[in-house]
Structures are given as structure tokens and as C-alpha cells.
Amino acid sequence: MSVATIANRYARALADVIVTKGETKEVAAELTQFVTLMDGHAQLRDVFASPVIAVERKRGVLKELLARLSLRQTSQNFLQLLLENHRLHQLDAMNQALSRELDVRSNVVEAEVTTARVIDDQEQKLLLDQLKQATGKDVRLQFKVDDAIIGGVVTRIGSKIYDGSIKNQLAQMKQRLMQN
Image (cartoon, rainbow, N blue to C red; front, side, top):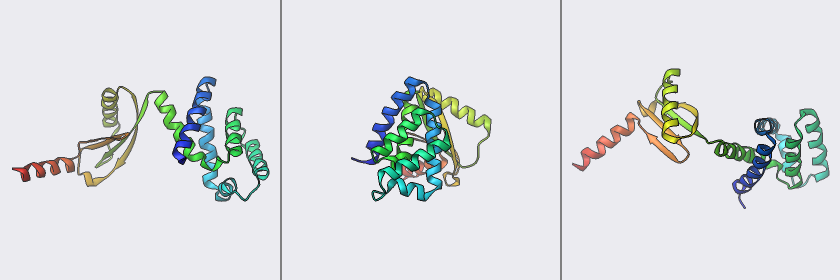
């Protein structure tokens, strides 16, 4: 079974628990904090990923980390479950899957917006309003600048791409001219 499939299963189960308990933001933030900690310490990540290191030793390391971080019980239980199931080294994938699952449940989509230049706050708000209206969902925007598109906007929401770039318009015009 792929890491993504496993991550999605754990994420859905955790989302069920934290939504029911009303701990959505807190647990998500704590897991992100733990992922950041592991990303910053390769040896720590290696300890949890290694099949050679005894589970008892891993439990001790995790227990010490949990004591220092003061995470809520739900986060601690989840991390301990991952350790027992030999999945703690896959926490980053699970955390990303959890974020996506919570977005789906709260009717939020993420839009990656590429422009040729940095756009000001007023243009960002206008774009946000238009995307909310088009999708019928709350939209979280991520901006990128790529001068190769010449001008206009390219927006990716999930697998859909809305290409309003001048580069694309020129390519379409070229295609039409070549057909005639």
C-alpha cells in the first residue's frame, strides 16, 4: 500500500476525532510543530524510521519529546499510535493529508495563483472574491511570480488550471493563425 493511501486513512481517522473533540486547529498546529522538529533533526527522523532501533528505545525518545513539547493528549495519542504501528516516519505525509482533509470538511480550496508581477492587496482581494464566487467555496491563495507568463494570471485549483496569461493567449492566437 502506498504512503499516500496510508496517510489519507490516518488523516481521515484523526480528522474524525479532532473535529468531534473541537481540537481541529490545535492538533493540526501541534502535528505541524512536530513535523518541523523532525525535519530540523535528521538523526531524530532516522531513529524513528530505522527498523534496527528497538521500539522500546523509540518509545523512550518519543516520551521525552512529548514531555518537552507539552502537546495535548489527542496529539500525543496519535504520535504514540504511529510509533506503535511503525509509521511515525511518515508523519509529514499524514500531516499534509490531514490539512487537505480538514480543508475538504470546511469547504476550503487552495488556489495557486501565478502572475508576471507582484499584485497589490486590492487586486488580490478582487481575485479572491472572483474565485470564491466561481468555486462556491472559501479560497486560500498562494501567490507565485513568473515573468515567463508575460502578463495576466494563471490559477490552479486542484487539478483545474485557469490560464488567462498573455503567453497562453499568444499561443492560442498562433495556433488559430496556423490553422487558417
